[in-house]
Amino acid sequence: MSDLRHFGLFNAKVPRFTSYPPANWFTEGISADHVRTWQSNAPKDAEISLYVHIPFCRRLCWFCACRTQGTRNAAPLAPYVDRVLREAADQRRGFINGVTPKRLHLGGGTPTILSASLLDRLLRGLDDIWGLSDLDEFSVEVDPTDVGPARLAMLKQQGLSRASLGIQDFDRQVQAAIGRTQSRDLTQSVVDDLRSLGVSSLNFDLLYGLPFQTPGTLAATLEAALAMQPGRIALFGYAHVPWMSKRQSLIPADALPKPEARLALFEQARKTLLGQGYVQIGIDHFARPEDALAHAFFDQRLKRSFQGYTDDAIGYLVGLGASAISTFPQGFAQNIPVTGKYATQIDAGVSAIWRGYALSEADRLKSNLVEQLMCYYVATLSDAQAAKPLIVKAMNQIAQDFDGAVTWDGRTLEIRRWAHPLVRLIAVQLVTPSTPLTAERTYSAAI
Image 1 (cartoon, rainbow, N blue to C red):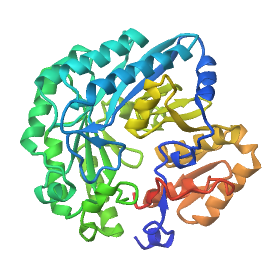
Image 2 (spheres, rainbow, N blue to C red):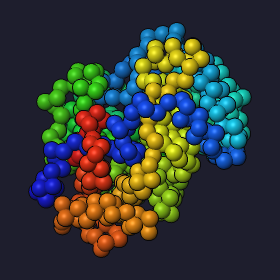
Image 3 (cartoon, rainbow, N blue to C red):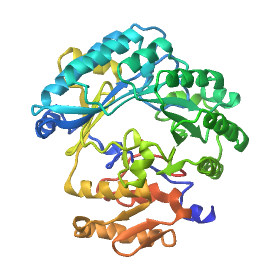
Image 4 (cartoon, rainbow, N blue to C red):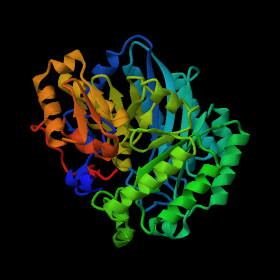
């Protein structure tokens, strides 16, 4: 770890690069007019992905820094669904050349907080507006503590093909410290229900770097999770950012592992998962060799997006709901994050677009390099990239600043295996000095 410490791994805070440029570059200079232009320029019957953000949770887990809000009753849920459908209809009108939705993902928050009837209303409404008959994948984030057979059956009836289950950790002391109680038996029951319905593609979300987490407790959590045989595991590092998410102030900071111990926990989990036959995908995902994500990895088709690592190569992602982000070949657009303000805009018949970013040619070239690094720890310059002096200069600077951690032959930069944890620090070197990174949405670089 001394070499990693030498390069500043345990002190630096950098973006997670689920996009390039990262979200803290977004500005309010992007408006609904920009989005309308981007939509109208889409080719005939363009393939798109749809993302619907459901921000509500029955409980607010303390570790979470997502755009969510708690609700003790169902009162705000039906009006929110209706507003999402109104926004969906407005967005659909912008694609004047037609679209072909291929993927649909419900995220949050807790999508399964919606009743079976509300899920039916949402999905039938989206089908009426967009036409969902050609979907290749319909996935939903499932909270095992807030779902039931009726909701799962409704989702399957509407075509559910993949479920992502939030687990985080099974240790009771850790759960108490992060405000999320969820037993192994309950999780197993939901897994069994999904499989009995024919939903065999399962993702698990686990966290390392949590308060009171030890090598022993993490090993027990991994053993329990692996016994349920998920196809994918997202092993995220807990980001303690109480200045961004006030609820995290309830977590005892002095019980969090130090950066070196945090990295050791990741390495322990990584070796366990590899030993069980999983393939490592980028910095924090693991998949069975037969899983579509592993196929994309092996075939060099892996992508990185706001949903993490994905085999979804579609260039159009339409985000619906408060805080949702849409992606176009020309740039990004994000909705207003505050649910009340989102409601006000939709009720007034006004676009919910809040901010975004228009990609330049240089951004696209750099984005490709960052994605290569984040997916494969290797980046090879294309002819167009090699013709840009600033990009070549940045790559030369990386080779100099990370001497010994990377190899560079003037065309291909590769991060040595022991130095893989440095990948986000290396990606930051591609940021132009004229657009510095702000503190918003930067996280510990130690994986």
